[in-house]
Image 1 (cartoon, helix red, strand yellow):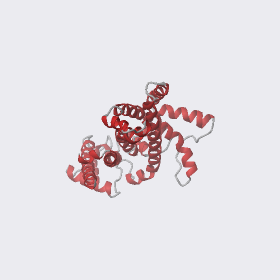
Image 2: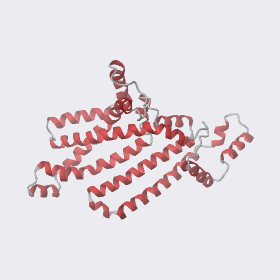
Image 3: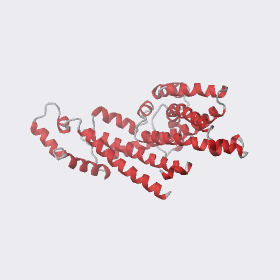
Image 4: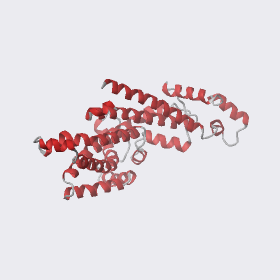
Amino acid sequence: MIRFIIRRLFAAFFTIIAVTIITFVLLAATGNQAARLAGKNATQAQIHQISVQYGLDKPIYVQYWRTMKNIFTGQAYSYTQNINVLTEVKHDYPATLSLAFGAGIIWLGLSVLFGTLAAVYAGRFTDRVLTILSMAGVSFPPFFLGAIFLYFLGYKLSWFPLGGYVSLSDPWEWFKHLVLPWVTLSILFIGFYSRVLRSTILDNANEDYVRTAHAKGLSDRQVLRRHTLRNSMIPIISLWGLDMGQLLGGAAILTESVFNLQGVGQLAATAIGNLDVITIMVIVILTAIAVVLLSAIVDILYAVLDPRIRLA
């Protein structure tokens, strides 16, 4: 098991290095950054001065090394906004972290519940109702659901605040401001995850090990809990790890914007609109690190759920 964990962590490290190189090269290919910073009417002398100032006249491998050094030592400054990007990310990250983990816990728990119920009652009324609800959840985009929740539950009934983020130093206000974003973000994932889990449980129910467990005299509930559900959780955990990595990197842009949470997603949207290369690069690397590390954790959980994976 220890060797398996070490192999996965090494793979994660080299994957992050590869992502930083690819990201840097792609963003460097977007054009002359010095000319963009200098403006439309800049002279060649002004463009050259900016290139020297920001080190953009150096070979690309030197620029890469300098940029990565600045990012990982907290000295990455935005060319366009002249701010420390890591400081800005640190300021915005609590909102994104709170949104992602709160919604992630909700959708994982409810997906397991609904997916299991749909599989147990496959073809019956409960299954049909859950199927309709899951399809409806997948069909509604977050910005639509968020707007509906804000109007009825926030504006009309005044049950919840009309957006914004409050730090965890005030737990009750923090919770009240995040309930609607959590629900909005969770609904899409609950519908998809529950359908995947239902299908996986029904597929595994026909496996030899399930028939063997029944032959040993175990009840249907024991077989489901100890064998079928445990193995069926492997694809769900995989999906959860990848989706959580994306959310931690700022992928919940729509939800953050609707509820004005001022998280990393909104920072990313602003950076893309301004073509702020350094800020975009920091957020992409942050996303990559989150995805890769969570994928490594998921692989380790795989090995716990199914020891055969440790041999891979």
